[in-house]
Image (cartoon, rainbow, N blue to C red; front, side, top):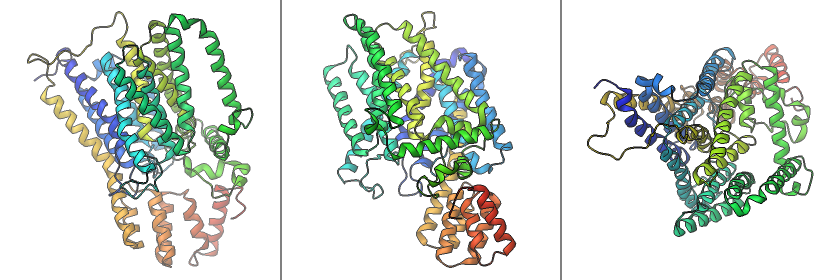
Length: 559
């Protein structure tokens, strides 16, 4: 059947909507503890890549028509982001495989961000009001199994012996689970405030919010509380504005919000009455990480240091105070700030392109807020949760199980604004009938092929990690080294093989691994350390290793 955009738009939109409503929950919930050394991020990337490439292949035949539904600025920013990432890959000098798939435990490389951009654009393209309502519902529903699992972990009944009973659910870290429960609680609370909400649904939503706030308390991470309060602060304003008896409180409400923001900002610097609740040693560490990310950006303002290559440069740019604050071995491979991670990775052009996308979402939210004078729970949930995500992004990592919702909600605000315009074409999905347009077989096949391409690209590091885990369990350093050289493996896998060789007193193997490491990852600090102390290292090479270590960690007194 020949492709006709006019005849097939509804069918294409419906298929993409289904994929988007699947990818969010699947990405948050997917884990692979029995097959992988990294049981969290790699399996999530498999779902994200499969769905996003399936979406882009479905759109290929009518790409111009579909992209034409987006504001020109959004198209330009997204194209700039993708193009600049592609350029950075080849001119930054960082290892290509590291840039493409990302470092171990993060996977914030080219593939990850390409998939997130595709998902953002696809979410904005839908422009069907009911879809965005379902997207908010999907986040709340995803929180249900996540909540149940976290409660099992708190009760010490986790069926998987990996968590030490810490309530990180399916996200690998209590900070990430705290943030996710904060985002989900905002949506659930706003939906509970909906004027026509059924009583039993309202009760269930509020009960889940109470449980999730309890879980956040159990995590010991304040991220969830901070973003929940921030999100509900914005939601509360819309609630006050929509109810005539409360409108007189709008100005005092805004004033109190500004005061709360000011006190929180002061507390981050250990000043004011909130300092004892907010400030801690980890805040100081984050200041160190933010400083390093900004220093990398200023040093490499055009192309950055390379995608997901922050960790290669952290020691060199962190400064003396950060080096000596605890021990020189307190290092990180992320700025704990998504904006600085992006700017450090790809310079100012990359972060400006991303901020431009966020700016369009802000503009869409502003237009919606001016039009929607009544309390629209779905718009309020979208906007409040999105703002909370932006705040969380300033203090945390782009963990894909949480981040997927932030990128989808960015696209959702843009698409929802277009879908709710008075002059918008009616895009409501028709009731299925025998005459409803069906997705052409050729387009469906393209979608399957695209999903396969995405799956293969994400499966490469997934498979390499799984095989390395098998080798790790044998305790055989030679086998570990063989698997650490596989396509998709990371510098960390090779470092573990090097550590195993050292512990086995196998210096020839350790020397071979060091050569391999420095060949593929010339800024690997551990490899230079080992080269310096190996007995087989010549005096000249030992001196060179020392000089290289001092260049890479200039304030380290232990070298």
